[in-house]
Length: 64
Image 1 (tube, rainbow, N blue to C red):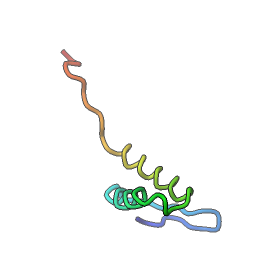
Image 2 (cartoon, rainbow, N blue to C red):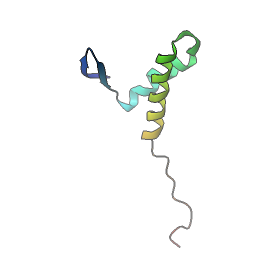
Image 3 (cartoon, rainbow, N blue to C red):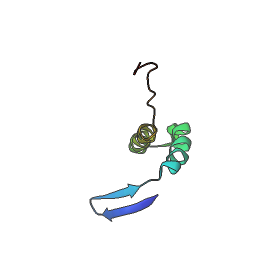
């Protein structure tokens, strides 16, 4: 995780893909202990983690 920019209006953080699950999983497992805003951010991180994986599978016989 790297803080790219921070000021009084907001913060920009860069996460490595390998670190996303380490951040997301423990928070989701203990969701009842976190505020809604925290969970919103964590769910966005989880979605980004999923989207960065390559889930495409070529349909069989597509070029036959």
